[in-house]
Image (cartoon, rainbow over all chains, first blue to last red):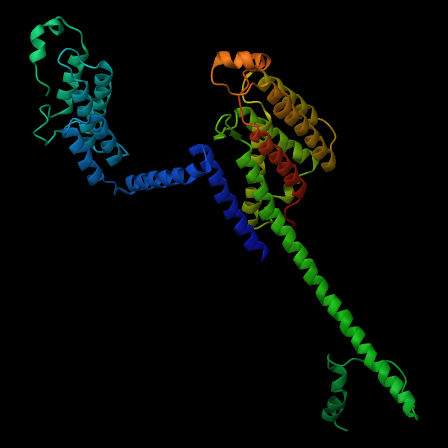
Length: 175
Length: 274
C-alpha cells in the first residue's frame, strides 16, 4: 500500500469511527441489542430531515388513516401516537390539528374538564396557528373547524367561572 | 587510414557498456591452470550476483519497514485512540449491567488541551513534523485526523478517571489540575512524560475504581434495607454522592487506560518528514 493510500484510508477511518463514537454517546443505547434499533431510528430521522431539506417531505397517509380511525373510535391515545408517527417532523397543519382536537375531546367532561389535557390541547392549537394561520378543517365531524375556535373552546374550558356551577351544564354536548 | 576508419576502431572505447580491465595477459600452457582460472572466474560472478541481490533486497526491506510504520501511525494508532474515546465514558449500571454512556464534563476538555500542550513541550509531539506547508494537503489532513483522535482519547481518559459527581470529583479534579499545571513548567523528555502519566493515571484509577468503588454500597431493594445491610457503605455513598456502577466498569476502564498509554507509546514525534 502506498503512503498516500494509507493516509486517505486513515482520514476515512477517523471520520467514520469518530462519527460512530459520537453517535453512540448521542443515542445512548442500553445494550448491544439496542444499538441496531437506535441505528434504524437514526437512519429514519436522517431520511425524514433530508426529505424536509429537499422539499419532498410528506405525511405517511397509512399511519394518518390509522390515527383517524382511532380518533373516530374515541381512542385518543392511540390516535395521537399514530398522528405523531405519520408526521414526525410536525409540519402538517391537518395532522397537528387532529392531535390538538384529540386533547380537547379526551379532556372534555360534562361535570369538569381535564385541565392537563386542555393545557396540552391549547399548546397544540397555538402550534397549529403558527404552522398555518388560515387552516380550516375539511372534516364535517369536527364542529370546531379552525384552530382559533378550538383555542377559544380550550381557554373557556380552563377558566373557572360562575357558569361552571350551572347544573344544566351537564346537558352540553362535546363539539 | 582515413578518419572514418579511425573512429570505427576507437568507437568501442566510448561505448558505456564495456568495462575497462587493467592488467596483464598471462601465457598459460597447462590445462590445470586453465581449469583453476575457469573456476575462479566462475565463482566471482556468483558472489557479485549475491551481493547485488542483497543490495536489491535492502530497499525492499526498508520499504516494507516504512510501510508498516506508516500503517501503525495512520491506522493502528487512531483505532486505539478512538477505541479509548469509545470506552472512556462507558459505565455499566449496577443491577442490570446496562450500558451508560457518560458525556465528558467541560473540565475534561480543558485537561486534555493542557495535556496536549504538555506533549508538545516535552517533545512527544514535534508540531512541525505533523503540520507543514511542505506536506501535501492529504498528509496534513491525515495528521490532523490522528491528532483529533488523540485529543478525543485524552478527553475520554479524563472522563474515565474523574469521579462523576460529588466531593471526590472536585478533589481529584484539583489534583489533576495541580499536577498538569506544575508539569507545564517542568523539564520533561518523552520517556519521562509517559512514565509520569502512567503514574498519574494509575493513582487516579486506583482511587476511583478501588478505593471509592469499595466505599460505594451495592444497589438494594429499599433505602432501609440498604442501611441495615451495609451501614458504612451507605453512609459514604450518601456523603460523597457516589454513583453505583457494576464491577465490570472497572475492568473496562483498566483496559482503556492501558490502551491509551500504549497508543502514546506508538505515537511518533514526527508523523511526516520534510
